[in-house]
Image 1 (cartoon, rainbow, N blue to C red):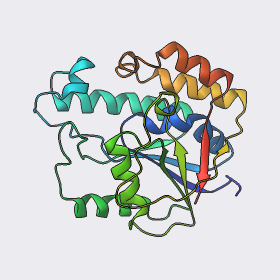
Image 2 (spheres, rainbow, N blue to C red):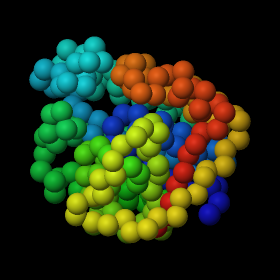
Image 3 (cartoon, helix red, strand yellow):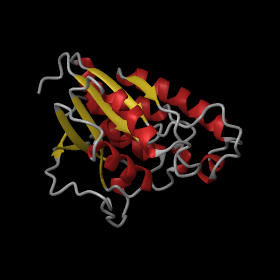
Length: 226
């Protein structure tokens, strides 16, 4: 499908997953005229005064609100570098709990996907509980789209982690395709990855230098169309 005029939504569990995983695809699609939205569902509540959870605390934040505000600003910069529009929903990740019932989350996601011609969700290795849950939510009844697909989650797919298939639905056998990308798209991705300054030091098994070099050399991105 041509990217020209296409409305693409890349569903991201957290404020970095989409660009770390398929940032070069996003940059290439946007440069060819697609309207690309990065929809982060678990973007947190910037007004929260709750103590920072384990991950956010390790990243140097004192409260959940501090983390949400800083990480949204990082995501804003990263999305600008790849030509995407960020959209954030105020739900919490596994550190804090959703802060809403599942029906409310489903309704917000469905409204955010209205009009999309292509929707991409996490698809492998689905190691993180938030990723599995969100993929299940989107593919298990949020609504019909013209084209749906999954993306390989980076850097998780580079780590030696056990497969844990989603418990309440099956993706079935998937055929993964490498995403062709131009050097300038990979450079845009590399720059965007570096915008997530608070997160990169905690990705200890894939330090920032490795992420940058991988993005420049070959993005390593893969998608499977459903």
